[in-house]
Image (cartoon, rainbow, N blue to C red):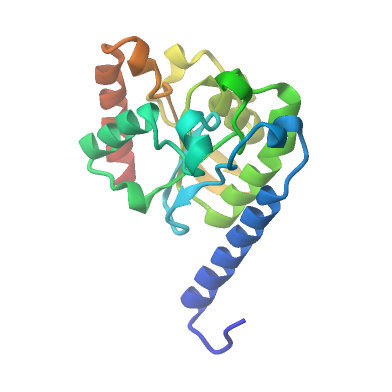
Length: 206
Ligand code: URA
């Protein structure tokens, strides 16, 4: 540990170390059976000082092969949405509810979410984002339940693009639910709805 550094530098080093510890734990994780079928776990990527954290569902085919979140088709859409809002990918942090790919991209199981989100909770606690953007129903439900907004849970079509405030043991932050970018693959019209919602994020972030 580097002694005598300014407090801000010290905090950064500690944060990096804690995130590295999570990475090492996930690499060895056997908490659920998904480790048996995955290639690489997808732990998270981006700035450890990020003000904005995006939380998706789980790795898909490309993410599983590379260990990087949102690097496939849904990632291309996410990149386009970020660009439309003037947000650089390297200044945010992106991770998922599940670190390992469910076979054939099936939906996450309750017990997988329960065991895997212990890592996500620690990532949130360490990075301390000011804005949490949930992508799709699974991450929205998890984050709303976790941060005292259970009574506000509705389908993503009702709450997308709205700002929800949460003050909790982890601190205070805004939560903005979005449709999962993959919806655009099934319905091109959704891109405009997502772009509008990203303009709301742009306003809040500024
Ligand atoms: N979909 C997700 O929810 N997460 C990814 O990392 C990729 C696709």
